[in-house]
Figure 1 (cartoon, rainbow, N blue to C red):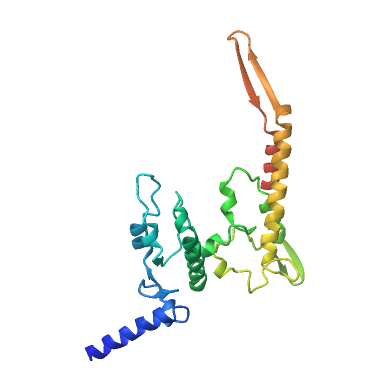
Figure 2: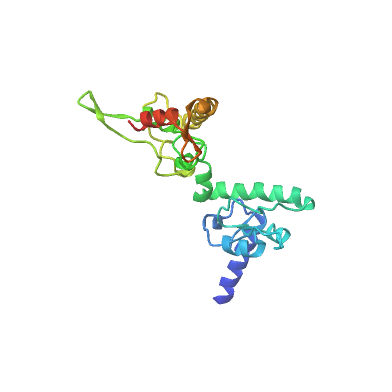
Length: 243
């Protein structure tokens, strides 16, 4: 019986290597299957081999060895110090296959990166380059609840920020949850482009008028001059967004 099990396991592994794209084991994230002829190993083991998460020129990256495997999870910052020129073509092909693997498995970490350019992704809240236009647009997309044919103005379904942040499980792909006729989820990505342009326009206008809002406070007794900048424009914008 043990000999039979060993033979079956051996045959299964050979099939994985010959037909990695259609192997049934690909759905199991157990670090023992194959993809495009390369073995998939746990991400922490792959990082240990390659040292790809170490930012130090004193470290020797094992790029060549790392390209013989695929990590079983998504890692965004691979080889931050770059790779040697002689491995560029091989590394690009490897990375393309790696992304295909993440797509095939619908990896949640990779799925979150596909949401970065969506209007409802809260990632831009961490940046000082945005003043919140995306929130205003998202507010306009909120679908109002109806009570016997009458709109209830104070009872809406908030859409920002999106609670999922995983493109593979997007809540707007299958159901109509926004107040937009013929809604397609690609609209959210198009609106983000518009929001970004408007944001940059406001920031540019502020930088051009910044000198008009500078006040110099002079202390003649102490012989000191303090420069005070009144962010009137920014304050007004943020005030309107919060109301």
